[in-house]
Length: 419
Image 1 (cartoon, rainbow, N blue to C red):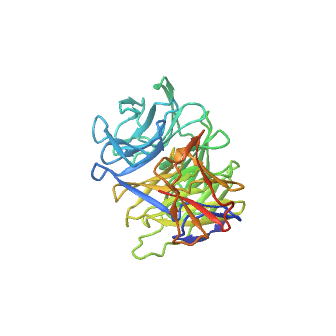
Image 2: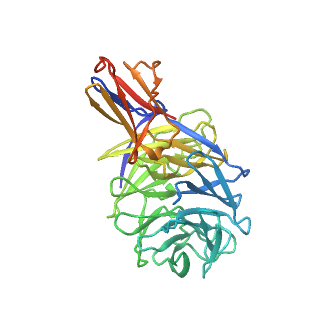
Image 3: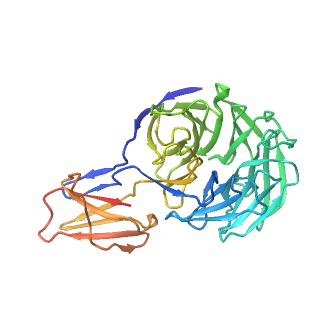
């Protein structure tokens, strides 16, 4: 077991700069976290996933709804029949048109199409499913939370695999051999080795299960760290949050665990440091939520170096929870107490090309059309002005060409996109 202490920068701005004789580039001038209200009161947004339709889908645990939020923040809600179903987690189904979700209040899983059509499927044994993922074998893998979650369940926790045929459940298997009793499994994901990895909150363990159902557990030291969420990282290992001890954990496919100490939140009124959700961003960084502190953290991993930058949600006491990398390239998360969905806007990569008196600026079209390109001569913080040239579409990029009338400019030029 290895413990690594992180270098940290708090409340830092997202800003990237490349300065040359005549051209430069910059990302957005500050860390942008946008928040969008949820129509249902006290919805308790929980599981989140990028949908096959270019939107982000999430569960509303308390409101009994599945919801969709598009890249502009417009929320659509769909009430699950019957009500009070307690939807917990959600994943895309892999067929391009459906999503699957766990139904904590019933012995079932649910399916919703991208146009809001529901169907519930009974599981042929008593389970309370929470975490879920689409496995490398095409089966839907779920975690059975165990008896303490909903009174009356008789199982002690395990892993469920559902076989789907044309998005219909045709078979189910239950695995719990060699698994700690009452381990309270949290979330599950597919690892880079083709096995599945999951957290065990009460047991303080990381579980690995093969597609044949063979379970191996690895203990975390100390055991009371409460591992919660888990994702595949940028380095060929699995990364997980440890809510009880303010740690991020890393486990490689040889089951070696390294723990990374996160910065302590010293802001006024903080209850505790409690990392919960974790996801891999498209920029190669890990992003996690610190729920009581109202923080979205960015962890940069480079070899043995581990650096954390913390960003506070605009709404205090928002209680950010589970988190996902959206189809738009940004990071999305639910805010339990604020009843909102948050979007952490990643810097847009600008490509700069200079020839004689022309500067060509390009950026991906998947970031949307709500961005303004600005330029700055000499990089004076107050001199940002809009570029009036209308972007043209060139394949998967927007492109703007700026031509200087009197030859190459003598000062450095900087460019940025502002939402």
